[in-house]
Image (tube, rainbow, N blue to C red):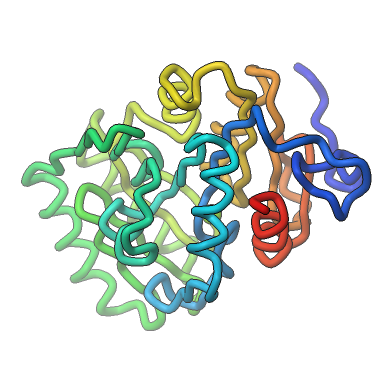
Length: 262
Ligand SMILES: [Mg+2]
């Protein structure tokens, strides 16, 4: 197995189109995949409390034009949330870690949650009544329990979610994240969705760049590395990563987007 590089060594690469970081690699010719929470947007105490900074929507639209429309949002949120946060953005998007998908032509792939998931979500809701500070997020074909406001309940929440996922069986999987544990449809991840995008215009033939901050983004980093692209992790934690480069914060990502799109 290849040894993993620690973050401290991953500071030398230049982002494509980043004029501020020295001789810029031109952004033309790249395809861009961006996670949302913790990457474009600062993490908030609860999933409903995130804010979209002014100017970000326009900067994304501009960057998308610069790369010939080869820019997609790849998130654990539902597409419904993305369309609310970025109204009329018209960007290709993968939701629920790749289980939902809207391609560059607007064609939509959705996921049917079925009755089992609703029952599991109800059981979690009942249980969470005894967990002050734990926030349940209903995403349609997935649901998450956030414990950022109640970190000492993390283990209890995780093991209850594990038992719910086991009860649901094969079609579902447990997704860990930063202060969150989630049950989502199995069989898709952010890596698979990046491959799917890369197989069709306007992504086809470009070099992929993926930016993300959490465990779910590692699947996308692995695919992008294999395709000869550039993987970028946001945030300097000691958590091992397959990403080739680390940047400090969502603010740094937003600054790069604003500059690269010009
Ligand atoms: Mg994230």
